[in-house]
Length: 216
Image (cartoon, rainbow, N blue to C red; front, top):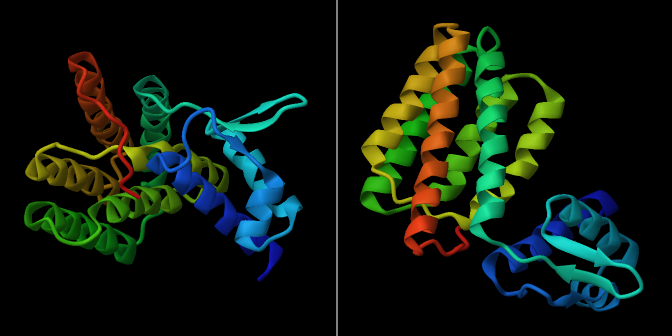
C-alpha cells in the first residue's frame, strides 16, 4: 500500500469512527494502537490525525496525547456557513467552464438523487456529496476543490428531512444557471440551497431534536 493512499484510508477510517460515534468525545487516540490495528506506520497515523485536527474532529493536548473532540450542532452549523459561501463561489466559477457533458452529468445526478430520495433506495447521501463536489470541480479552482472536500465532512452526520421535490428543484435551478452562464443566479441558488439545509438543522437544535447521525 502506498503511503499517500494509506494515509487517506487511515484518515477516513478514524474519521468514520468519530462521526459515527464509535469513538466517543474525550476518548484518547493512541497512535501506537491505531498503527498496529490498521497495519500502518505510526507516522501515517500521526499525519492522519493532523488532518483531522484541522477539521476540528480531534484535539491535541500537550504531554497527554490526541483526544476525540465533541461533535455538536453549533460546530456543524459553522461548517454549513462556510459551505454556503464556498459552494456559491463554486457555482459562480463553474459558469463558462462547464461543458455539455458536465451539465448532463449534473442533471443525471440530480434526477438520481430525487429517485433515491422518493423510493428510499441507493446511497442518496453519498450521491448528493458527489453532486456538489462535481460543481466545485467544474469551477476549475484546485484550492476551492480541496477546501470543499474537507468542509463537507461534518455534513456526513446530518440526515436530511427536506422535501425531495424541493431539493430537486433547487438542484435544477443551480444547473440551469450554470448552463446559461448566469453567474450571479448560480451563486444565489447554490447559497440558498445550503442555507436551507443549515436552517433545517438550526430549527431542530431549537426544538431539541437534533442528533448528529452518521450517514456516510
